[in-house]
Image 1 (cartoon, rainbow, N blue to C red):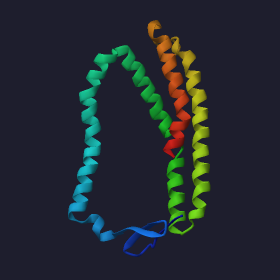
Image 2 (image 1 turned 135 degrees about the vertical axis):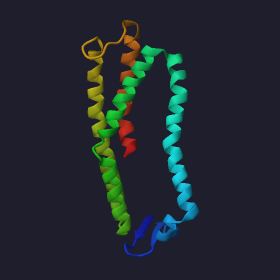
Image 3 (image 1 turned 45 degrees about the vertical axis):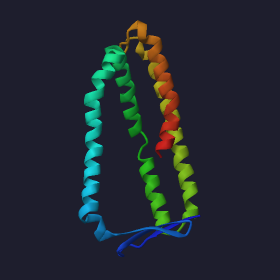
Image 4 (image 1 turned 60 degrees about the vertical axis):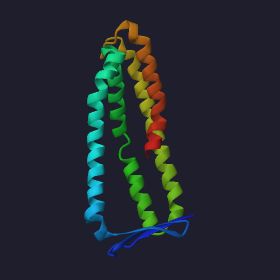
Length: 173
């Protein structure tokens, strides 16, 4: 089984898996030389690479899809971005609760926390599915204008996105 511990005020943070020692880090090592420099560079790369990929790939994507289809894709990305905020912090809370239980050496408390949070995320996803499907009729020009030739394609894309929302939010937790 899982077990773990962290003693506040000590120099070490220990995580144990199947009762065997897995990792111990000295706090002072977290801010030293090569390790810190490597993490800073990795963090910067993780911030810069998506921007570079966007600058390089978006013109290619727009050229391949066309402006209208790219606009539909941007609409779907926007909806997904809003829905990713709609988890109401459940994933963060789950991480905190599980960390506390591991630190208190209470690993038996983790499965109920995990499944409760995952079920809540799935329920939120189902509500968002209904909301996304409710958007489809508005694509006839009430709120969003979609060219008639792309209407069926747009509706199908939104239905696919809506179908994927509940599992997406469930996996994020």
